[in-house]
Amino acid sequence: MSMADNNRENERQRGSSSWGTLKFLLTCWKVNLASAMEYRLSFFMLAGMMFINNFMWLFFWSLFFSRFQVVNGWELNDVMMLWAIGAGGFGWTNMLFGNFNQIAPIVAGGQMDVYLTQPKPVLLHVLASRMSLTAVGDFLFGLTVFAWVGDHSVRGVLLFTVSLLISGLLIMAVTMVAGCFSFYVGNSEGIARQVFNSFLALSTYPSDIFRGFAKALLFSIIPAGFISYMPIGLLRDFDAVFVLEAVSITVGFLAGSILFFHQGLKRYSSGNAITLRG
Image 1 (cartoon, one colour):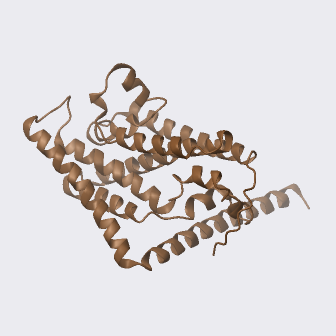
Image 2 (image 1 turned 60 degrees about the vertical axis):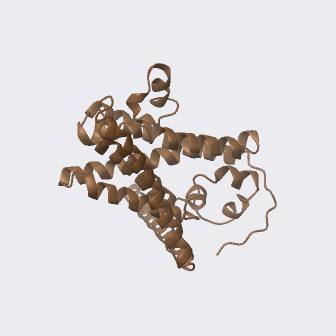
Image 3 (image 1 turned 90 degrees about the horizontal axis):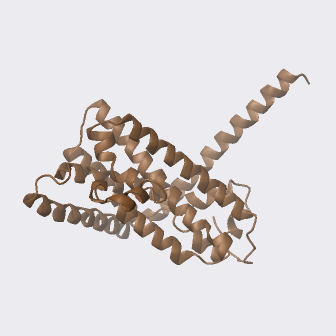
C-alpha cells in the first residue's frame, strides 16, 4: 500500500471516529431527555422554579438600580445581561454535560469503573451521561432576558452566542479541575462543591466592584471575571483585547482540565462498583 493510500485510510478512520463520537453524544442527549420527560411534571416544576428564582435576583438588582442609576459604569441592563450570560452558559453545559460538577463524587465512590469498561471516550461519556433538569430553566432564563433587553441585530445575536459558549465552557473547565483533585487527594467533593458555588457566585457580580488583589484573582486563578465583564467588554463596548484574553483563558482552562482528568485517570483505583447503565 502506498503512502497516499495510507494517508487516505487514516483520514477515513479519523472521519469515521469523529462521526461515531458525535452519534454517541447525540444518543446520550436523547436518552437523557427521554429520561427527564418520564416525569414531566417534576421536569417542568424544577425548570420553572429555577427560571423564577433567577428573576427574583433581577428584581432585587432592579431595586438597587432604582436608587443608583449607574454604578462604576454599570446600568441595570448590563447586570441583566450578566445574569443572562451566566445562567445561559451554565444552563447549556448542565443540559448537555451535566456530570461536569459530579466528577469528585464519581471518582471517590468508585463509579468510574462503569465508564472505563465501555468502549467510549471516557471523559465525554462521564460528562454527557447526565442532564440537569433545573438547567433547562437557567438556559431559558438566559434566552428570555436577552430577548427582553439584548441587542437583536445579527451582530448582537452572534456576540451573545459567543458569550454563552465562553461562559459555559469556562464554568465547566474550572469545575472539572476542582473535581479531578479526587484522583490525587482522595475525596475532594467538599472542595469541588465550594469551588463550584464560589465561582458561580463571583461570576454574577459586576467585575468592577472588585479592586486590587481580589480583581487580579478574578482575571487569573479564579477567572470568573472573564464572565462577569462580558456584558461590557464583549456586548456593549467590544474590546478585542479582552475577548482574546477571555477566549485564551477558556481554551487554556479547558485543555488543562482535560489533561488533568486523563493524568488523574492513570492513578485511579477500581472501586469494584457493580453498576449497570443502559
